[in-house]
Image (cartoon, rainbow, N blue to C red; front, side):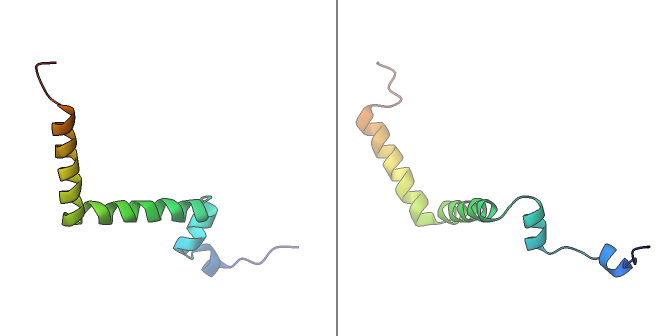
Length: 70
């Protein structure tokens, strides 16, 4: 008994969800994507970048970072 050939199915494309499932994705893949998205949104936010730079500068001054007279 020969199996029927379905050329439409063989030539079809998989959706992103189907590719993710085949690649072993699922919740872990979504979590990695979410973290990457959040990091990108934090880094591109000028207010957050300014606050982070201020914290680093104040920390360096408070600890004497970069001082040549250690």
